[in-house]
Length: 71
Image 1 (cartoon, one colour):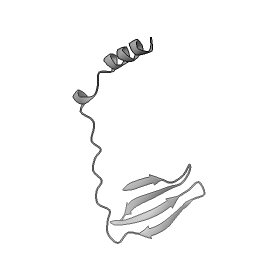
Image 2 (image 1 turned 90 degrees about the vertical axis):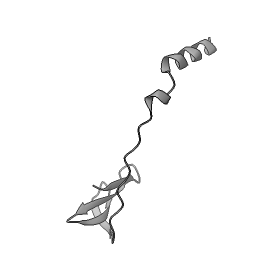
Image 3 (image 1 turned 45 degrees about the vertical axis):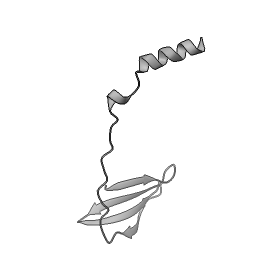
Image 4 (image 1 turned 180 degrees about the horizontal axis):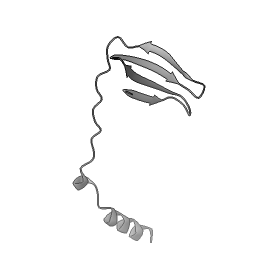
């Protein structure tokens, strides 16, 4: 599977590669159908970047501040 997009509760569009060819498929609870044959392959997706943990706020400190504010 190259890409996938949720369209509804049980529906999605997927791009699969078969024998060097990429196909756009519609997938539902009732079945799978080919929607389109891509003339050119999709560009590779960038890997998601993880946040730098040093830049995240200190959870214990935030919780402590919030508890003092609510008291």
